Image (cartoon, rainbow, N blue to C red):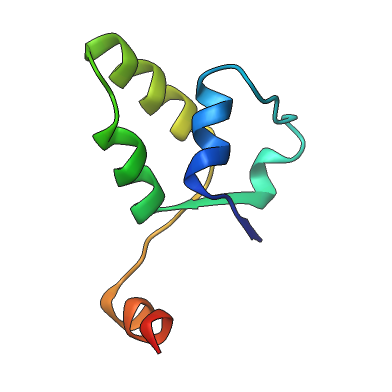
Length: 72
């Protein structure tokens, strides 16, 4: 399991980076990265594109217990 940071996904969405299909199941997004990406969309078309690209990756949801560990 590898977590992908926001800037990597943004480059992928914008076509500046290719991620091979065989790698996608091992690359995870988390809910924080998803939120950061969606906060940056400018219009409905960008939203649709971003949602489509985000949905290609497994999602790891961050809960309060994980956030508490992260902050330590």
